[in-house]
Length: 216
Image (cartoon, rainbow, N blue to C red; front, side, top):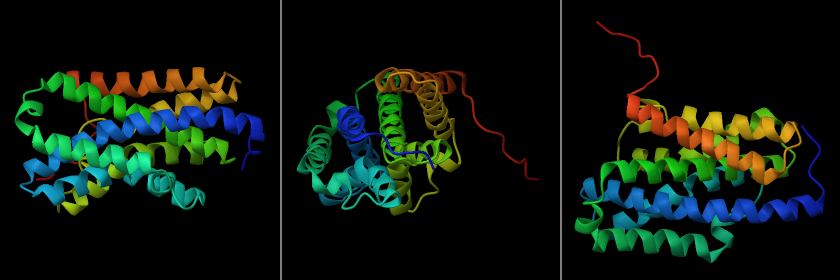
């Protein structure tokens, strides 16, 4: 385990974590609502899944870090953003569904990158080993979507399709490496986010996926 950051450094990095968390919450809440609508859920189900998708990964991360109550439950802004995004997507579904696929993929990749760097930074701020910080950054990025799929009785997409969790992990590795090289936290976060975002976009564009066992 690494030595926790000094109090001043932790306070300086708190703004980075907070901003990334809120932006990621907005993007993932809308995505969760879209998935719930396609699953034929009613209004209540839509807003619940938007909340779960938006904050599930962060809550899991905070529980594993012992940062309780989780940030998403302490700060009313998380729930407000998640429920508002879910309700807005429900009410404006036909307009939102007309958004080009490439834009939705881009926003999803941006949300993944934001959550991955937020989770990694928070883990590092709590003095976690870099390897564990990478895992927690990945969990922050994919945890909400995994819980959403489980509630919809589906095999989580992160376990069966595309380069998704791997993109979050790659971004977290770059960020941890940058911090080890003593880059400023914001610089490491930007480079980590760019790698995560870029890898996700390119993987969708080129139809990359991880190997599967070819069953008879």
